[in-house]
Length: 131
Image (cartoon, rainbow, N blue to C red; front, side, top):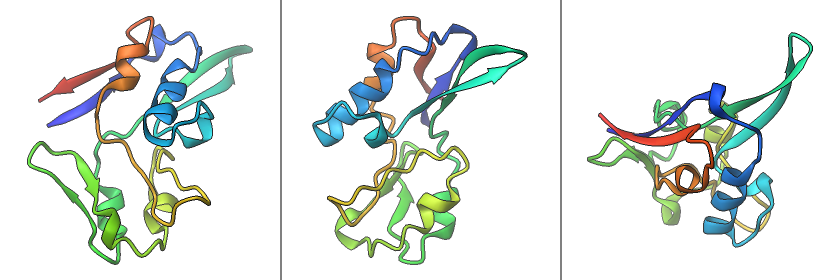
């Protein structure tokens, strides 16, 4: 199974992964369009980045009433966008809150484990793994 692995101890909160993902799929550097999220959270009085990535858990597929989200042979959950009705149940049920929906498109987007975020990460906090 192909998936993203995160190591928050290495994350410096630069948000380059978000920009690269948004640029690749939406042609914008706006992090709101990224299928990865870096949350700046205060923990023990210090600002620490928390990485939210799709771990291919399948919760989105479980709640999809149209059955348009299915795992491919590599274990990556994909959306058959042409058949999506845009109910956005998957967006609401994503435990990592990394399903993306915009006003420009009816259907949501999700991580396809393409690895572009891992390629631009300067510290190796995000990487691609195949089990």
